[in-house]
Length: 525
Image (cartoon, rainbow, N blue to C red; front, side, top):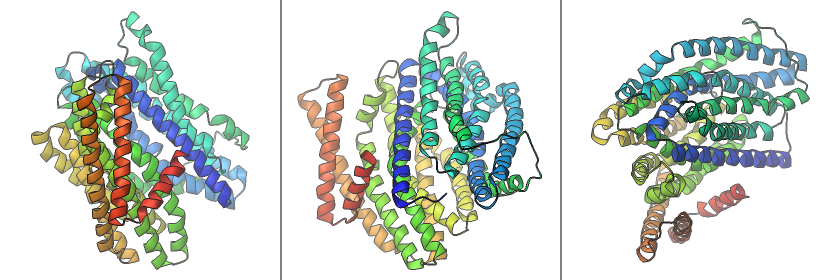
C-alpha cells in the first residue's frame, strides 16, 4: 500500500509517539522491578524471562516477521485478498502448532534448561527453584507474542501503524498492573511476590495481541483452519527465514554464554547488566532507529535507480548523523552514569551499591553505543543490495569474537567484562560492515568520516567533562539528597553539557549539528 509524503510523515510521527511511550513504560517497568524486589529475585526473573525470549527473536520480531511481511504484502498486491488471508491463517496455524509443542516441552524441561543457563543459582537457597517456576509460567508468552508479531505485520501491510506500534506499550501496561495487583496478595499465600512479574508478563503478552485483533477483523481478515506445509507462500517464508535464522542462532548462543557467565558472578550481576543495557538502548531506540528509518527509503531508491554516487553520499551523511547524535549520548551516559541511575532506580530495595555496580556496567556498554546505531544504518543497505548473507556472516563472526572476549575479560573484570566485550563486538561489527559495503558501492571516503568522528568525539569529551564537574560543583555547595533536588541538578548538568556541546561543535566546524538539532526537535514534537 503506497502512501503520499504527508501520510508517510504522519505514520512515522505516530510510530515515534507509540515507540516512545513503549520505551518510557518499559523503563517504568524496570524501575518497579528494581524498587520492589531483591537482587536475588530480579536475577531469577531476568534469567527466566530470557529463556522464552531467545525463541521470541526467531518466531516473532526476528526472522519470521522479516520473512512474513514481504511475502504477505506480495500476495496482497499481486493476488486476491482471500489468498492473502489464507496465507496468513496458514502461518498462524503453523506457529500455533509448533510453538504449542515448544511451550509444552519447555514447561516440562524447565528444570534442565535453567540448570544449563544458570546452574550457579543452586548456590543460593531457593533461587534456582524460583527461576524454574517463573520460566514455566512465562513459556506460554512465546506463542502469544509470535501471533502478535504476525498480526502486526498484516496491519502494517495495510498501512495501519499506530495500533501495532502501541501494542508493546500494552505489554508493559499489562505486566505492570498485574504485578502491582499481585504484590500484596501473593505473600499472603506463601508465594514469592516476584511471581507477579512472571504472571504479568504472560498477561502483558495477551494484551499485546488482543489490542490488535479488532483492527485486524476490521481490515477484513477471514480465519481459515487450513494448515499446509506445501503452501507456496509458507514454503517461501521458510526459505527466506534461512539466512536470518543462522544469524539469530549465533546471536542466541552469544546470549546464552553471556547469561551463563553473568549468573556465575556476584549476586545481582544479571540485574545490573539488564538495567544498564536498558538505559543504553534508550537513545538507540529514539534516535538511532529514527536515522536508519529515515535513510532506508532513500538508500533503496538510489539502489533501484543505480545512483551509486548519491547512494554513497546518503550513507556517509547518515553515518555522520549517527556520530553527531550518539557519540554525545554515549559520553553523557559515561560521565553522568551514577546520577542518572540513582535518579531512575535508587529507590526501595535498589541501594547505592546497586547504583555503583549498574553504573560500571553502563559505562562499558556506552562505549559501543554509536556502533549499535551505525549498524542499523548499514545492515538494511546490504539487504537493499540483495547481499543479505554478508551481514549475517559478519554477525556470526562478531558473535564468535564476543564469546572469546567475554571468556577472557570475565576473570579480570567480572560482569563489567561482559558489557565491555559486547561494546567491542559492536564496534567490530560496524567496521566489518563498513569495509565490505565499500566492496559493493565504492569508497565512502573513510578519511573524512574519521575526521568527523574525531571532531564529534572531542566536542563530546568537553561536554562530558563539563557535565561531570558542574554536577560535582552543585553538590559541593548544596549536598541535598532529595529526589527532586537530584533531578534538578541532573537536568541542569545536562543543560550545561548541551550548551557546551553546541559551542564546541560551532568552534570545531561540525556541520551536522544543525541536522542533529532538527532531528531532536522532531523527536520531541
